Image (tube, rainbow, N blue to C red):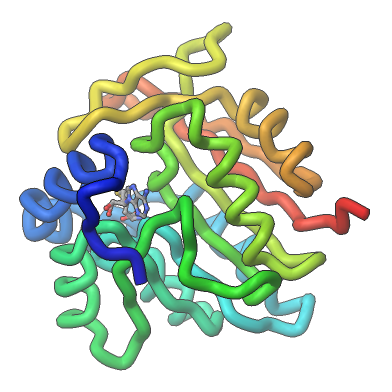
Length: 220
Ligand SMILES: C[S@@+](CC[C@H](N)C(=O)[O-])C[C@H]1O[C@@H](n2cnc3c(N)ncnc32)[C@H](O)[C@@H]1O
């Protein structure tokens, strides 16, 4: 597993420290959020059905935080484990569900072998990576997924007409992406996009959400 080192990028240390500080608050704030998010549940359900129809297999929840999505996918019947940059998030996730596997790690260098996964979920977790490092992260997702494996991502979306913009995130620096820009980045990394969903902003929010389901295809 990746541990804090003096050579890691400054943004990674900042993100880890910010989530370590906010972990308890975040856990309480979002504990029951999924119950009020039908689009989230729908996309997680479609992803689950696709992985199960392919015969199941290991699924990683990358940037799992306190594990609210990991536990939801477990309840839906997936063989799922969580990885997160923040040791404090992982401590809370393990405390809540000692029977599930949670590890500290970074999405840019996953502690997983080539083709190890049948599915990978990145749920509002790619938003903190500096945009120039997102293609490398997607290539890392492609490396650990088997051919035919499924990727599900959710993220805050940009205002109309923009590909990318800073996001006024309460925890640490982050970015909003357009669904079409992320889709463009996925293709050269060996993904074929199956479905995308754009959810409009809700009344109390300034931005909407984008969801993408993609399949890992053979580049050869
Ligand atoms: C907005 S929270 C989302 C947490 C969880 N997916 C959820 O929906 O509740 C973002 C999470 O991504 C993690 N994260 C951010 N950058 C990461 C990275 N480079 N590698 C692994 N995890 C990361 C953070 O520590 C944090 O727990």
